[in-house]
Length: 295
Image (tube, rainbow, N blue to C red; front, side, top):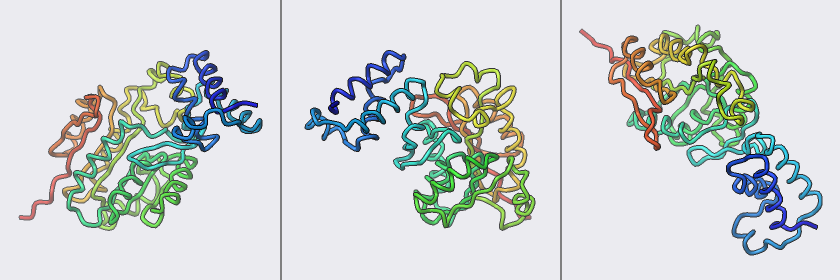
């Protein structure tokens, strides 16, 4: 019978042999997931036997990880802004880079009372739901073209107990009847429009790492020919759905700051700036809808 220690060694070896850079970490995460034992327990009880059934299930997961399926898709767990989210193959796995976007949104919500948030291309809902968790007085709408992604977002809203403050709309950007009804009306105006849209140029997708290229949903990656398609479409209409003084915030690819800034300025947004992430790469572009001037 296998022990915790022997099973971890076997899993690590299999992943190393299949070229996984973080074989030891991945093998550990899957062992913890399968056995429920944390590191402190493991170091004290590494010689504890593991049932044949659990060992077989663990090695099945290891085999799938050896095929470059992301750990988060195997465990259905991803962590973002300190919260745990359910994920599957229908959504992008939340990434730490995107936390910069959420942190900037929180800064610009500032003292706004009962803020209303529109999250375009919501995916797992991690951006919108994190904002709702950080701002207990906020409510928001998550929009995605994928019904499968929206099911994940709704599930996360329920798990995190914010479903009463989050609506979800299936729409190809602003095309759904929901927006035809809301556009231009006071009841349809948001304090923040936030988006991490698909921004990889179509021709670059095949150059991405295997975990992303083969296992993230392609429609969540593909920003069309030059990667800027969704920024153009959203920026062109964003003003209709923002309150005067409201903010538009995007996550961007690290080479897209100048292009996205230029299109936002051309659309009339003010105070446009580029914000870097922790590694120092351009990661967020944001700007403000002009306040109404009363003569």
